[in-house]
Length: 397
Image 1 (cartoon, rainbow, N blue to C red):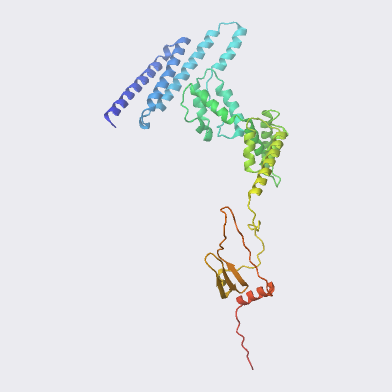
Image 2: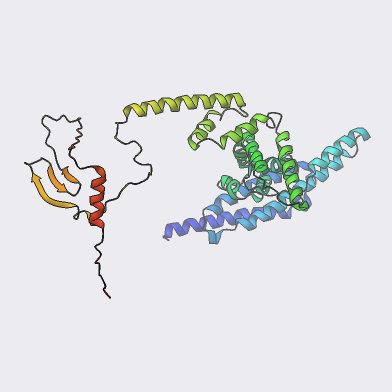
């Protein structure tokens, strides 16, 4: 580390020390505060100190970081300030008329919020759990107006795992960024179409029960009831038969058609069955047109089923190739084929010189001869070449 860098680090440590000293002064002045204005001013100062400390601490190495300790001091002092502010609100309202006091006390109890040990289940990114998680978090944390956004953000981070945690992990912890983080979660998981498909999948993927068992039967009943209640909570369209039928048909079509349907239906929350059938009809027409175009462009071949396995009549291996050759060979000029006599007759192979051949022209040739030799006799001759010679011995008594 250069001398300049060392000097900069030293200045940051000094600045961070001043912030810690200001925090200590705020903690020491707590018992002397008696008015709401004094507490409100110090709460604002407290938020500013935390942001400044977080900024300074981020420029130092992890080994020198003191953010965790300072964060704990910040949360404790912020909670104490808010509790005292709520107590002053209750005292100031105690002298009003009974009817008004009753109403105000009710509202004050809402604002006099103290977070208990959270019993909200963690959210791991499963769509079927989103509605329950969102409702619990909104009612317990998000809707509490006296709770600073930075504390809401802290609790939110503690309740997320896997993909949701990764989604907001790079958002800095501050009052202003809480709303951004919450909106990111809403954009990603508050998707009714995805939730409906997830619930239908769980309902249909339940394993069958082959033997009478109260535990398995109860599990089937509870899971089915949970899925149906979840669908009903999303509205009439979510629980309609169209959602079920579309999901079942989507499991039967090819991946590319699924992808195209996802693109087409992205702007519709709950597309109906007619829209899906119209999509399939258009998809069929486009595939038929593509098939016709391909058949017109494809060059004809002698055997279009050559890739399909069929019964084999005879196989000639390389080990018997030279055994079927017979004496007799006719060699033509350069770039002309060669005729070779074999057990099965003459075989013609090799190059063929074609005059005035165009660059895009393709030539195919076939050569046959007629003689008195029939197929049966040819096969008989072939097997004779493969037959093992057996030496016969005659014993005379």
